[in-house]
Length: 457
Image 1: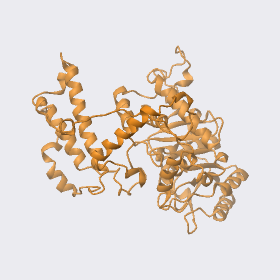
Image 2: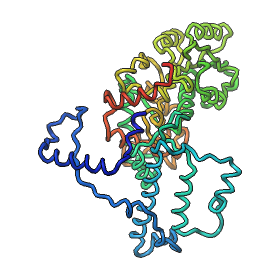
Image 3: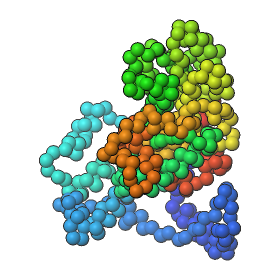
Image 4: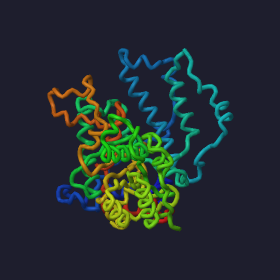
């Protein structure tokens, strides 16, 4: 957890260090254009930064007493807005600093009835508006009882930490407050999504294909099963499942529950999800998978999809894709990679072998909000073949997805999504990616190594 232990503990020492760097930079200036873009030795310009913490980080909200949010739109409201947002940023900054304090609690835990009683003064919403002073206090009080997911000792879930650039991106995203269903509503973000998805598909090993950001890995896995079902029987979209042969899904006993939930949602049924035994390291036993597929065929049913988990929730195990892929190819079974957690090892030289042969899969789930540290939530589903997402989901609502628009309507991505309104999850990933070197960066290698240390790869 080295990345969490770089917080400042001695301001005087840091000030002296910054001054030394500043003096050194004056005598050793480097032409930035002469530095290769992918050089890991990053050149940084250091400037003096004086901060009176006694004033800048103190809270005096008296100017906001009896001032209400409606006044942001009044004459002089912009100055009030700037001042209010400045106070909010200080609350967040102090919280971020406390998260990195190893001597603080990860959570100030209270049972639900206790917490409700403690926050009774601000928990309920009634007819009377509260002034800005109270709203600032509400923000501070809320964070006080939150789980500190960036704390060095927080190990509960697979999505941890806080990236400052990602945080800033979330602010900008909220300010833009747009929807991702059409290019006309989100022109810049649509192009960003296309660019990043193409880059990530390249890491998987696909030159072409399709993809879209989804609200979490469970929905991404649902997309994969939906696509697999459409490919094997496109008539289901119109006629439904009635009368069709049983479709069977295979997944490791160590896999995420979302595979079974997708089968329930799609009408495949829990009885037709076969849990394949795992070995003592948590990997799917391929010989058992082969037996299950043969049994399905003997029963006259249709093998629909094999889900290979790459980075299981509990053990961090990677199912052997190189052994599973030939079996799927032999029987024409859709191979899906649930790489929600483990997909990010594609950024490393050391661990990339764990995903050997994933280019042979038909689809892949990948959650940047896990190992990559992007703010929740950020998940994508990738398909090897283009056009399937549109074929299975497109309904062509003429009040939204008109074909006679003044631009190329192929950039209207909403009709290939399950939902209509879609949150902008791309900007934070795009901006974070712009701020650092992911592929092959030794610092990122160390981070991924720390993330996988508890797993059984």
